[in-house]
Image 1 (cartoon, rainbow, N blue to C red):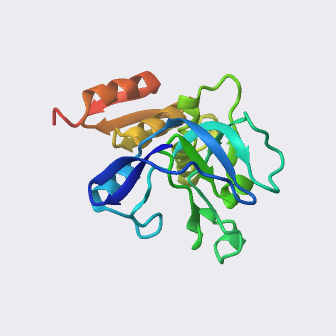
Image 2: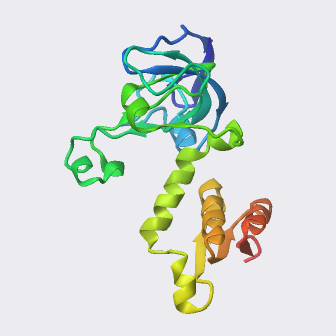
Image 3: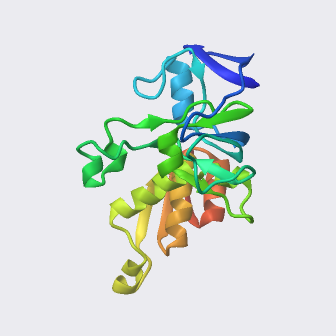
Length: 223
């Protein structure tokens, strides 16, 4: 198959590599959509990541696709299922996992290699963080599941809830600083839940997207 392989700092190459074969508990998907996030850009610039990967290695960690092979012991899934696999899974055994602080897990299993025709999903991710894509949701949107989950987690940790509007008698006013992909997702999530959102950013094009998502436009480019 054709895949992107990271060899070092700003050294990413398209190569023919062996098609993956699933071991016990694993699956293989045909990648239909793979996104590039800020972490991918930083890893490419730095040539590696202390926890996620060590070059040379297959690259990319956010994708949607369809199952083409099942490893021994995998249940609940069939070939042809459309799925999105999150980019990591907790060990479920460390200090933080036992307290349900899964994002702080000290032994995360990572999912690398989405910039390829096929991707093998590690068994812990198949068990804990593999999700079926609804029929009416395109793969291009489903591939954003992981960053959207980060946004929804952030909204929940912020203390905001739709009930605040009822308590205060008006929409809570919230400022989002930064008009990147995550910032825009925060705008959409908060506005959808009834907040009055002001977005600070440096791109008129992105501020327009934010406005369509429900923000009050405010650009730093003119300040």
